[in-house]
Length: 469
Image (cartoon, rainbow, N blue to C red; front, side):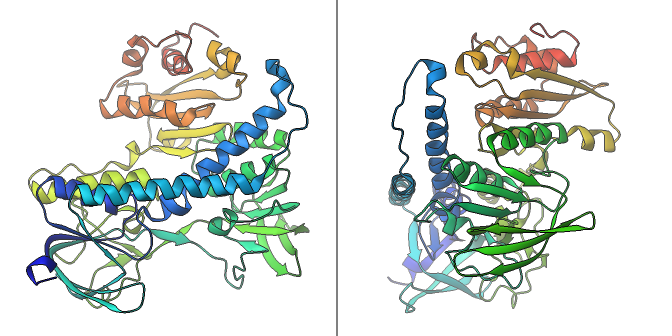
């Protein structure tokens, strides 16, 4: 490449859901774009997170449905589950989508540089290829950091990939363990609990905080706790892990709660205690880019303390969600193109989804947070047990919960547990983006029979006008 071929308007480090989306949008806006990725296009989300886990969850869900087949008049004799095939299928889906991103890069004329990037100045990067050889320097007027995050590890507990796992190893495990202790009851822990329980593993979740999914609405998490317990998943909340002793083919986990301690035995231990940002980009510290708790500090334009260097996604702080990264990727390059158009990303309008069965999805404030902020609120609930479609599907667990400001009618939050909750939450997100009121949601005609009718009924419930309960 000549010097002109190595000079860009924008260089993006990291090809996850933030980086590759930002690259495409920047190219659409006429920028010359370079994208640097040390592994596979698509990042952790596509290759080791969002996509393959959802493929495994789908396999687990079908297996669970097959065990209920007689409810639907189907006799599934000699049912046999092949976990290895489920793993292979999940890898195939990730591979297919990663190749799709390769195509999108070619289509949008984004120059892809495989390797590790290191800052040599605020406008220059040195790239070391996967073979440890230099891919030479590139220069860019602006540089966007989209390096994502990695699993948080527990001090003194090395990951061996056999007994002690992170989510990555749990997606490649060549066997169904007899027992699994999951340390952490957030979305990752709960999803893997659901997967492995379906295949026959005796699962125990250990969560330090008082509830699983601790950032979700307490009423919703209580419903999920009950549902998972009914499946046979043991859940220990308000419980601290004191020690993990790894032996041959098993681990002993000593935990304590309210002064009482006990020892748990597991063939495997899955560490799911959150994620930490990948902020160790070579040369970044030397440039003086400010960080806070490992995250790059950014302003409303997603720009760091050093002009021309930006950060999005997990690296820029919570919530650590793929769709948040993608949205920020679009917003940040559009702000580069139109500097006077500044509309900050509102974290309260970022949906959160957990894909266990039944699913959990939410957006906005929980009931407790709304009250803590001083809102006078109206709460509407509609159970799926009163939904015609949920009854026909045999999926009656859960509810839709709408929280509205009693004075102004503003929708403050929507929380769902139930079948297809992660799809239903989109209506709530659109309603909040348009500043719609419960009256306006209720005034929108929801097709019958659909699960989405529950959203309309919950909106009516905030007005004291629900029909079917």
